[in-house]
Image (cartoon, rainbow, N blue to C red; front, side):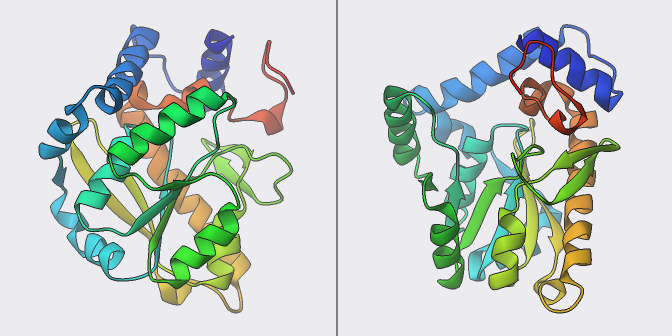
Length: 248
């Protein structure tokens, strides 16, 4: 089934399928998992992580006050979260809980071992509380959120977006950044919206600008590092119709 999803995602995005794509993607996924599981693997990886020089001002903002950090299913996002903590960012992340109780417990222990704080329930309330206390809240902004009313454009195709970023920013204006840990170990922050651009009259139009800028950064990353785009395993374009062999 995953093969069909991958094939359809590449067809819809119009991207060429890299040679040995599934093997390379599987290798990168396995490596990301083993850096969490193996004792000492993630600290050794993070020792080689370096901040991109142009991201220094953005990092100072993340350290010093409320901010929203958006990322995606590209690269090692768990290692990215741990790296921001090592750089002094008061980060709280959001994640969907895994279905199995044993899997949830195992992942929670791994995240605790590496200092990755994550909330999986009552997320909006926890996020608002964290932002109001001056922290940085981070989440993977998915391209398909069931029953979402906010739409975006991803590789020229309509996608439904998680409304949480707009909900939070309408109540707690904060600067917004795209964060990613690149395959070569570079931590990169890209400013998306300044705090002064958030809230007030015309906010709905600026929220559309936020979605457009976010997807522009993500599309650039995917074109440069297609075998590190783990989101290709998921049905990203359900608004265009059902995926072969996939539940509606």
